[in-house]
Every structure is written in C-alpha cells, then in structure tokens.
Image 1 (tube, rainbow, N blue to C red):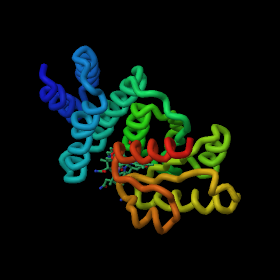
Image 2 (image 1 turned 60 degrees about the vertical axis):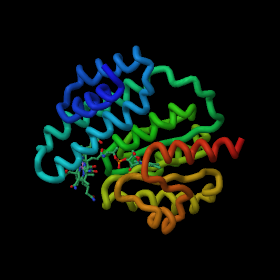
Image 3 (image 1 turned 180 degrees about the horizontal axis):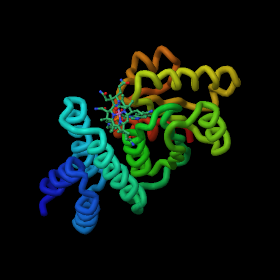
Amino acid sequence: MSKFELISEARQTILDADEEKALQIIEHALTEEMDLLELVQEGFAEGNRELGELFENGKLSLPELIFSTEVMKRVLEVVESLPGSNREKVKGKVLLATVDGDVHDIGKGMVASTMKSYGIDVIDIGREVPVDTIIEKAKEFNVDIIGTSALLTSTLKEQKKLEEKLRELGIRDRFTTMVGGAPCTLRWATRIGADIYTEDAIEAAKKALELLMKKK
Ligand code: B12
C-alpha cells in the first residue's frame, strides 16, 4: 500500500469506527517505516475532523460519534506506546490536562503524542481535572510547562481560574502556561494572561520545544 493509500485508509477507519483495521494500518505503516505522526495528523485526525463536521450537521448520532472517538483514542494510545523516533530526549517536562467539567480529550491526546514524538517528557493527567489538582501535580512533578485544553465555552473559564490561582499562590513565575482547544483563541490567552496559545498540536509541540531548549 502506498503512503497516500495508508493515509486515506486511516482517515476512513475513524469514519467507520473500525478499530481492527486502524491497528492494522499502524502496523503496516511501521513495516513501511512511515512517519507515524504524519499518519496520525493527515490520516486519522482528518477522519476525526470530518466526524466533527458530520456530527455538527446532524449526519451522525451521538453513539456513532462515541464509537469513532473511542477508535481515535485507541489509535493515539497505541502510537504513544510505541518507541519514539530517534530524537534525543529534551530536558524539561510538560503537564497536560483537560479542564474540570470537560471530557473532550482527543485534541489533548494529539498534543501529548506530538510533544512526545519531539522528545518532550509529557505528563498527561487526564480530563475533567480541577485547577487545584493541576497545580498540585505541576508542583509534584516539577514541570516547566502547564498546558490545558478546553473544548466547551462553559469550561474555558477554568483556564482563567488556573492563571488566577497560580498568581494567588505566588507561583505564577514558576511555570509557563499554554492554552488550547477549539473555542480558545489568542485573544483569550492574552486576556487571561496565559503565556502561549497555539491552534494545533504541531505548533504546540514546536513552541514547547523552543521554550525548553532555551531554558536549559
Ligand atoms: C468528539 C466530540 C465529543 C466526544 C468527546 C470524546 C473525547 N474523548 O474527547 C463526546 C461525544 C464524549 C462529546 C461530548 C460532549 N460534547 Co462534544 N464534541 C466533539 C467534537 C465532535 C469533536 C471534538 C474533537 O475531538 N475535535 C478534534 C480535536 C483534534 O480538535 P481539538 O480538540 O480542537 O484539538 C486541537 C486544537 O484545539 C489544539 N489543542 C487542543 N488542546 C490543546 C491544549 C493545548 C495546551 C494546546 C496548546 C493546544 C491544544 O490541538 C489539537 C490538535 O490540533 C466537537 C465538534 C468539533 N468539530 O470540534 C464537539 C463539541 C466540542 N461538543 C460539544 C458539546 C456541547 C458536547 C456535550 C455537552 C454534549 C453534546 N450536546 O454533544 C458533551 C460534553 C460533555 C462534557 N462535560 O465535556 C460542542 C461544544 C459547544 C460549545 N461551544 O461549548 C461541540 C463544539 C459540538 C457542537 N457544535 O455542538 N463530544
């Protein structure tokens, strides 16, 4: 199968919620020594994006959406569990979380796997994580960057709450904060005083890498 075919089939497996086929494609890509990140970004994630459109246009039911997103999550899990590229490990750590009240974690998962593929040490503490837990874990793991993801307009405020709490505790300078998620914008990031906003996972990983390289 050509690289183009693999990418196209990867996209389709998400639309079809076909986990078995999705995993076969990853195996195939591995034997072909294809860049898995490219397969994820241009294949699987593209299917995931189309899924979102279908759902929003009422062409996909919620259970169908859940089936497909489970496959997408499994894909990200498998890709993350594979030994990374030959990149050297970067010194420094990034903590990632989806904010309290929000279960959307596919985008965060993509940010995590992209950062890991860049050699960054990522601590992903999951979804629906309260601000206090985020701070507690950031201190515990002594991370350099705290990245939060919010997908609902109603949960965006948690990113603001994190900024306020860090300031209140007098530890804002200890961390670089990164915010993302579909409703999040540069304007929002600036307004709440977050350090970095990026629109997608690749940009997020690049910015984090840049910062960590500068720090050490
Ligand atoms: C999949 C999905 C779900 C799945 C989530 C499964 C999962 N495990 O994630 C399920 C079915 C569970 C779900 C539930 C709900 N959902 Co929903 N969901 C979606 C959908 C279709 C896709 C989201 C997604 O995965 N996008 C793909 C990823 C790759 O994109 P992304 O998250 O934006 O991430 C990228 C960037 O934003 C960035 N990024 C992300 N995080 C971070 C973090 C950092 C630090 C940085 C730098 C960058 C970054 O990088 C990523 C990759 O490039 C969207 C519609 C859409 N088109 O976005 C609705 C959507 C987000 N959901 C919505 C809603 C309302 C809900 C529900 C309330 C129920 C409902 N009525 O459907 C519940 C919420 C429950 C809760 N408490 O959270 C609304 C939100 C409306 C709003 N503005 O608030 C949307 C927009 C759909 C809609 N139009 O109605 N949902």
